[in-house]
Structure formats: C-alpha cells, structure tokens
Image 1 (cartoon, rainbow, N blue to C red):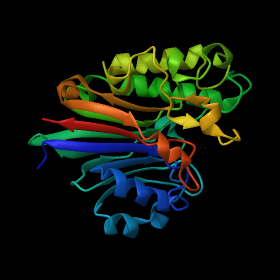
Image 2 (image 1 turned 30 degrees about the horizontal axis):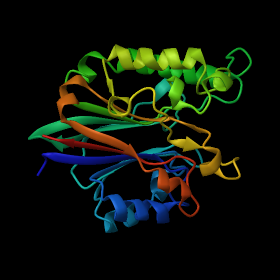
Image 3 (image 1 turned 120 degrees about the horizontal axis):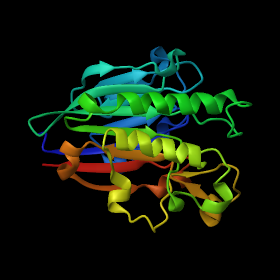
Image 4 (image 1 turned 90 degrees about the horizontal axis):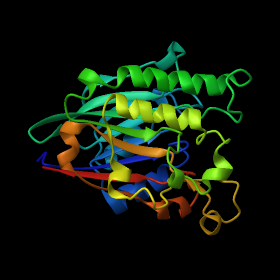
Length: 269
C-alpha cells in the first residue's frame, strides 16, 4: 500500500554512535522512511545491517569520513537516487530519491545545510560565506521542474527563520542561524519553489517551535533555549496529502542523545 507515508527527519550527530536511539525511534514511531543528517561516516562503514534487521532494506547513502553525511532509509523502494555536490567541494550534504506514494511516486530531498561557523560575516568567516553560497544554489535549483510534481524537502537546514523559531529573537539576531541575511535567504529558497513550510502550517507562528537544544546547557529542558533548525517542506501538488507534523522532543532526553530532536511528518491520500 502506498496511500500512507510516515517520515522522520533527524540530525543524528553520528549514526554509529547513536544507533541505539535510532532503534528506539524505530520501535516507538515505526516510520516508513527515515532521513538522517550528520551521519559522520563513509558509505562503507554505514550500519546497513542494523537497518536491514529493522526492516529498512532500501537505502540512499551519501557519506564521508568524520563529517557531514546524509542517509535515507526506507521500507519502500527508493529509485532515481541523486547525490548533488553543492558548491563543488565534495561535501556529502544532499541525497534525493523517488518514494512510492499514491499509485505513483514523490521526490524526497534530504539536506544538511552548512552550519556557518560562529561569525556572521563572510569577509572574515569563510564557513559563513559557504553557507550563503550553498543556500543560493538551493534557491536556483529547487524550483520549476523540481517542484511541479509531488516532492518533500527535509533536513537540518541550520536556519531558524521566524521570531518564535528561537528562544529569543532579539538576542539571536546577530547569532548564526537567525541573522536576517540567513532568514531572508532561506525564505527566498522556499518561495522560489513555492514550498509549503509544513511545520508552521500546523503550528501557528505565534507558538514557540524548536528542534534543537545545545549540549552546553546544564539542563536543556529547563532552560529551553531552543531553535527550529530542522524542517519539512512540501511542494504544492503534495500539500493536500500532508496530514500533520510533530517534534519528538522526548528524544532529546534519551541516553547519549543528539542535540536535535526527530521531526515526524505524515501523509495520506
């Protein structure tokens, strides 16, 4: 049956280190498709057997040693796999594949956008310049033919675009991930393809919505200084089929957690 789809996107911050909580997620949520970011391992060392044992026999993996990396794991067949090299520097930050849905298929993009370093000034911080260039390439590409059919874009986009996507709008305006140059550029990326921000579609803009809490906080839950860095976007042909999104906040408190929580999106005909 391809009339329902449950998808999870999660920056796992090392898939091999955190495989036990990935298995916990699978036990609790039973997603059809899992999109991971920051897997931090080359393809040859990816824990494929653990995923196969859990029922995820179809994999689109784009990894590298120690850094970055994205992987899409599916109970459903994945076809037309594409790994785009943004900015032509060889980083593993994108993988796309077609997933069966509604008697046909949808295009699923899995992204890990560069974090951008600490200083929001490309003249003194090349990492920030790289982040802006990466998103500019997204803007030029993720429109037109890429969004004329059913498509989903998920991942750690490393930008918290709106006022209530961060714990303090005023205090973070000069902090990388919430600076105006980043938030405005991400909105241009979204608008270029007329993508729907599915998380904000279901959660009003005046409500706080976070997916990331720093490891630096002694008590992350009490401090609650979060940011919404992880996103689910849906192309217009798929909008009637998106039924809900949610953040599995509890996962941030699991044993040896990622600093990101999983985001769940559900689709049905």
